[in-house]
Length: 454
Image (tube, rainbow, N blue to C red):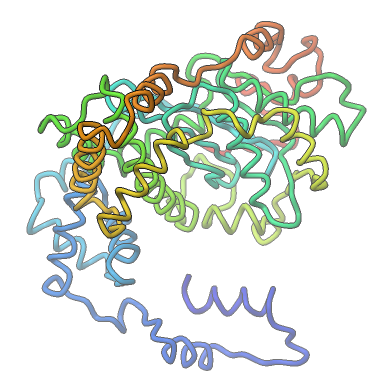
């Protein structure tokens, strides 16, 4: 944010102007005294940031101007670089890819409607990394604000306990004023049944007039538009560099997805690191304004600002439903088995062995430069323990069974999905008000706004 925006927020939400005064000049003095210099004040040139940009291009080879400006600030000590400097770098080092990127693509437009913040949460899974590396991603987004509610990576995303836990953890992370949206939305599938049931349980408990109608929309095919857009953005902006890193281990024969011990070491090493990287990506998306679009009618601004302060944006409406903590506790106890192995990164017995080996290595901070080195060092330590009989064969067999056993959905979850009617996206007759109001393929519902096209 610039100084004018910061000053406006301080006066509006944090300073009692009847007691204290703060002006633009004083704010600039305070900011400078804290070492928080702006782009011009830092005065970076192509000579001072070229090496940083080259380093970042290895990890983010497809990132554009805005993304590179954000990345260098996030990953290189808060450096603020002007667009002119980044443009000059692209002109000198990547003129061909730069021109190709500016040519753009032909897009197929789709429409999506939402009444306001927290009217609907859209979620979707991403399995591009599942078969090769056993890594499964999941996202949820508020389509009105564009705010990414969660962006998670795990070794499973097909078990409904995992997805249900993502939902409840997000609600629980909202502080003392827990809240849920009016409706949740996903593709049809067993992985989403506990989100549908947990959310409906909360909504029905707080509003008995809803009866037994499921407060969840199932969208078939490629109609879960907003979540799919987020995957498209992730694949273009974030994934390529990390896929290169993952591929490097396969090419060198360091990782075999059919080897249970290697799989567990891989999960122990890579998933926490990749989650931290996804958290950084999510934070950048939520705090970066998107380009204005002529066909988009929702407010323009940073997603986090729109999501948490909707009244600042043309009096946008917030449809959040406040939830007492006791209701959340009851919902979690009903729908989430806290001891289920699918919620464990690795089996507890393996974690103890791997953590001891990691500590013996000096507990190095894992990053894109050393992640495979940490992995191979841990693997060597564990394999040596197996060869020396320091790790019993029975324990290794237990680990293998844990990997091969997976963590798929239960028969009860499959039966629950089969029992739910998908009439207009919700359970209930076609005349159900919720299903009728949120018919994304029909004309614009009263009070709703078009929030995106692609």
